[in-house]
Amino acid sequence: MSKRKTSRGASRHQSAPASGNGLRWYSAGLVSGLFLAFMLYLATLPPEPGEAVTDPQRSSAAATQPEYEFWEVLPNQEITVDVDPAEVPRSRSTSEVSQYLLQAGSFREAEDADRRRAELLLLGLQPKVEETRGDNGRWYRVVIGPFESRSAMARARSLTAQQDIDTLLIQRKAG
Image (cartoon, rainbow, N blue to C red):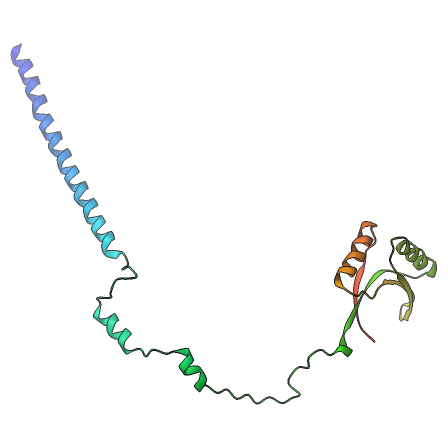
């Protein structure tokens, strides 16, 4: 019986050093692999902005490029443009100023237009009824304005919107 116990004990001692030896090799390989990966990472980092360039190709390329100063080059520049006066767009003059109106409705019947005009008068606005004739017959437009400023137009538009009256912005030449 004693032989059996010794053979079992011997097998345990022989397997223990073999597994410890493999763990050492694995650890050594892992550490050396991490070290090499770190060294490769450091080699691929860009140089600091303050460091001098040690690459001879880069330094020779930088030395051959001329340095320009804009205040030296700009006074020596001359640009000539040949444009006919007819091609230049005219600036807006005071005679071409547009006025803005709000159309608060367009009706076939004059009574409907007068009813809308009365609604707008109750809001404190100054509407007018304009009669127009076209291919599709006679129409009565209810317009508000012209406005002296954008803020006055926006105020009138918000008042009509509160009363569920849709408005349409109209631009006309003043005159």
